[in-house]
Image 1 (tube, helix red, strand yellow):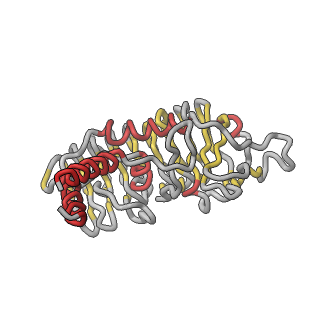
Image 2 (cartoon, rainbow, N blue to C red):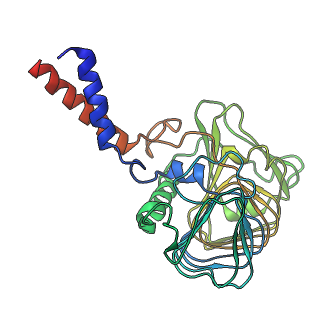
Image 3 (cartoon, rainbow, N blue to C red):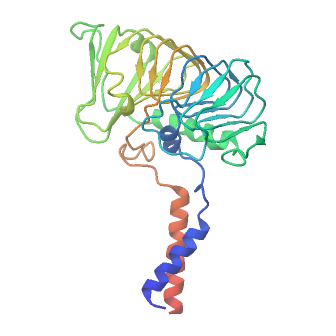
Length: 323
């Protein structure tokens, strides 16, 4: 068999083996596709501008997916609730994003622009159909990422109280180098700032590994919006977070009840979300680390893709032997 025909045969074989939605979501997929993911309940009357997944019940009336921005395409609809929508207030899902609610909906659900809808299993099929297991699809990848990032060795230092002007306009500057900047700090250190800015200093992005049980954020993050897609705040221990000023960056808080009085510019993963301010879609735009001891700039390989690639190589070797 000529090599060209062999390659076409391998391509066809790989195409047949690949599912329509290739494999489970990686942590990177989730943070690029979704604005908010909660393992438990979500309560808000404010806009969530990107795509949302609620592992528990949804309470309150809000508008979803009205400004998804740079969010990646997804096999999920704009609003997915594994539990029920328990409040009688109207829910608005905009931009043709659609809605899937596994349980019941107590109030009116408006799907503006279409996008499909399924409440309690009908009338339309859920997207995706059926809904995948929530723990394996969302919780495990994101909690795994949080633990993975927490194991990274810090390569940048936080300014101390001796910094001129402290605690105002504190310059948080990454060390020079390639890849990601990694900071290690406590919630008490973060709370000591009245205002601060972040300087990536040429780095691809920054990881802030924050330890401590709680944080009430009254600091003014001066360049929160401009760096929102370049930062991950990893609150590994916190059980309570309340952002009272505008915040920028993706927030990983697997154990926490998270609230906000003003917008959070970025994605959120939390145990529960009790929002008083908006959530703005600002998906990360840098590669995630490969492993705790690896190069922080190396992206995670796609397991399903690697498996199919291996299948293709094996098939090609077989075809060559037969030829």
